[in-house]
Image 1: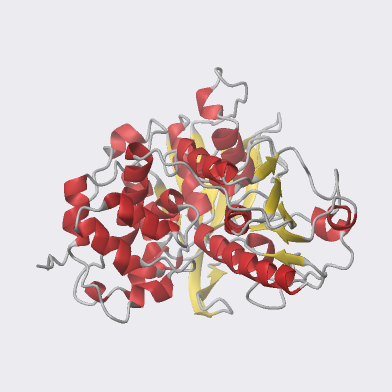
Image 2: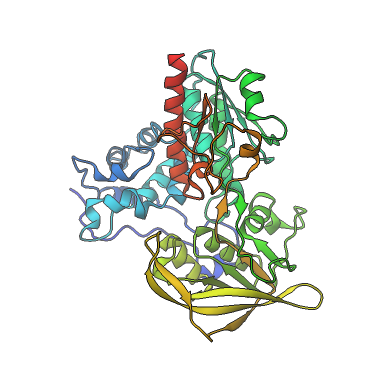
Length: 464
């Protein structure tokens, strides 16, 4: 019998006033009993609308039906048929705007908790099963993957399963991309990312860190001198944008990229055990309304800031961040100053930030993004105390690849131009995907791009 409850089974979480002082994961995940109960809410629809919202085509009703029967290992294996990083996707995918958006149960209540069930299956498998990964027979072809983020790792995994000799070149000293340096530990434990990466290594994927392609080697050198038959570029969008307002060069003004990289990848939250400190004053202002802004604000709170404010120029309704992240931030004591925009950062005589001058905004007609365009309200200026200001208004791709690969077409935003959904570029034998093509987007969309590119690369090399 289906469970006809209109609400999802709640997932246990840390108390907000406890978790905002530590970097342990916010949500504890489902128990076996909770997972079975939630899985029984699925109606197993014949036309499977939920799958239409999944960029990597996870067989959603099938894995949920297996959980409902208590077949947890089989459920994980079903997910793994199409997804390289199930434990990651179950935690950070915006299911509410993808698979769960199309769930029939969401018409008269809450949709089935697809993301929570995916997380449960992955966590259960990691804890209870020690399976050996079988390396496929090599097919004699070599593929270079540039960037060890979600798109690159997905492309690498899919190609390795097909017998390709895959080498991943990562600029940082640790693989994982945004999963390691961008998303905080309390949302995505790094041990989980490392477990997923280790599975790829067992498949035979070689990961070379501290390899800045465009400096150490060029794309042309990989193809023409290093013997690679094809390449995939998944270098992400790690170049932060700034507002170009007065005071952005003051001490205490950071990009969100720098703050999150220092805290997540370089473990500033464990200073002095790890030797990367980061200054957080009593008052912190974070500018922006996306997931990166939420991550930066919640991290600042955990680093000891007493008052953390998010300043966003539109209303909360227009915020691009996930509703769950906004909800968690509010629970943890983050102050939201919406319909406000910074116009300058005011500094002290010794060159440190002290205050942010803001202006109140009102919304007019929709702009090209479909959201109502904000405009300043004359005479509405006010100031907010801030020894630290974190700018989280977007990122663009690093220019290094495009500057060292002259026959690689890019657009005015610096993104690589893809000819088709598979990510084929203007350069023979080179594909690209993820944020390097789209600009800053989601982990699951990057994974979908990596999967499509892997299929296209396989077809291309077989045809040759």
